[in-house]
Amino acid sequence: MSSIPTISVQQLADRRQRFPVELIDVRTPAEFREVHLEIARNVPLDSLDPEAVMRERSTQGEPLYVICRTGSRGAAACQKFLAAGYTDVVNVEGGTQAWLEAGSPVIRGKKAISLERQVRIAAGSLVLLGAVLGYFWNINFIGLSAFVGAGLMFAGITDTCGMAMVLARMPWNQVSNSAACCTH
Image (tube, rainbow, N blue to C red):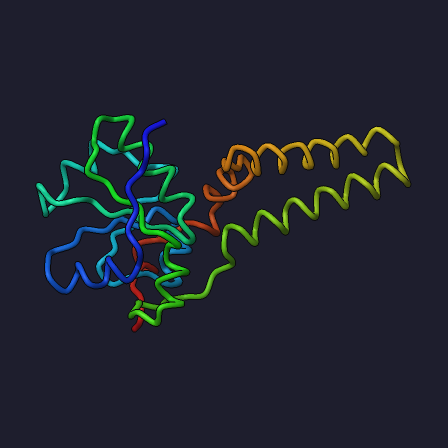
């Protein structure tokens, strides 16, 4: 696994003042609609095509910066670019959350439940459902709780969450073109 170059939000803000910066945001469309950097273009991680992104670039020869909520999905996106042979990609440390904490300007739109919260709600609901059904209906339903627990352990170890990938594709996490505009 290749080392992924990173940049702090302060370094990105400074660089943006001096040079053209191309930034892709790999969060879901709903997360992007809620809050994003004004220079960011949304390219969700689950549909990221490194070749297509590189073909559409406006600043050839400059690094491509990648951002997500906290940096994990940005690192995964950078890894996809590296695997496709593109080395001039840089992950933004701390992601949009760090950008907000630094007090930097953003575009705000319609509020959404973050993907991380959706995973916690779904996982918690499934664990509770498995425990309740196992206690009141059939002991075998406890396997549902065990399955979700194993999935959470796998997600923690690998930093890859299958439930998040499924939830990211749900209709409520998609944005229609008419709903894509945001307010400042």
